[in-house]
Image 1 (tube, helix red, strand yellow):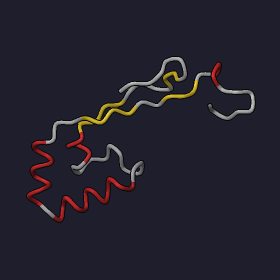
Image 2 (cartoon, one colour):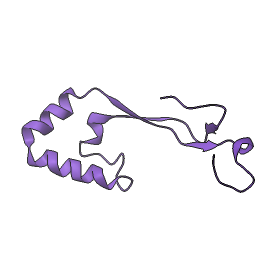
Image 3 (cartoon, one colour):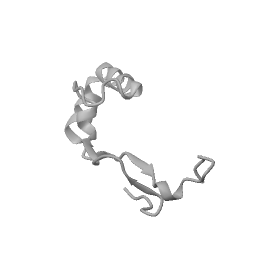
Image 4 (spheres, helix red, strand yellow):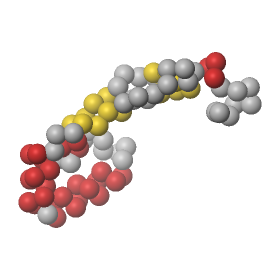
Length: 80
């Protein structure tokens, strides 16, 4: 994950989620991403695919909340 330190600063710590855990019966992202429930429903309808995803997917999802640095926000409030 990359971003310009000249324009952005951290708002909160980076969160890391194993993607395979997002497809399981977990509450990691419930309420945040409506599409996750659709993906879970699809995987439940194809048990073999669900098993492969839960056992073999090794990627991770990183989420970082950033905000524009105060010194780069123009006086009219719009980002450049």
